[in-house]
Image (cartoon, rainbow, N blue to C red; front, side, top):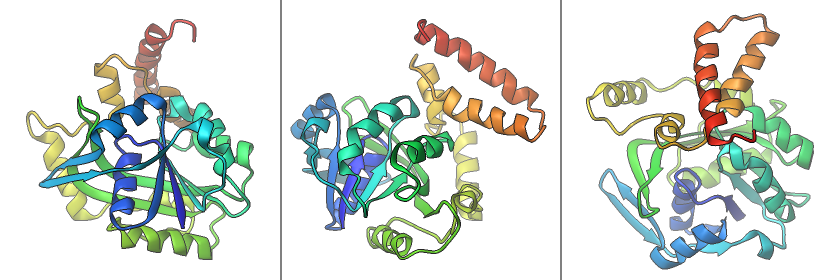
Length: 260
């Protein structure tokens, strides 16, 4: 199976590295700036006793010219539109797209662009970040991708993707539909570890949106919180605390992007 990982950051880089180390045919679609870093340093993973360095197969959008069997889409929602345009040449009649983004709003965007057939549901559970060198730092044990058909049916391609992931040491429990994947129960041990980590003084385990906020970067507020509020309104559910948090993040967003 020919695999294209769109993005080689904390999430896409992590899962792509696991697949490449397992001997799979993995190519990373990256921006020129990220390509320069990866060509100089390699794709490096550290943390929790691991020290992995790979020489990744890279491609930039201008050189992408043929379909892949599997596309792992892992970018910030703020880059989704551009990423979808860039990966278009990689999507053929038999391509499966597994999006590993926060929230769920991207599913409609991808279906509108590529049709319903290629797009699977995807949920990633991983706690990683990039350090100042652009290396991937793993901060907690989870390494899970849950995927399934959006209409809930079983399929041979989902079985094949799950087997591929499992063979690379990535947990891939069964979940027929994205709604099931999004609500997949968290194992007790994983939940307990997360609770201990986030309540320990000085813990590095923080949500990516929080890290973006304190670093003065744009956040995924509309893609995650805005979409969640819209879904709540459609169900007549009141979300006062979420509304307040979203308002604060929208103010931050406007400061970061005055033209928005």
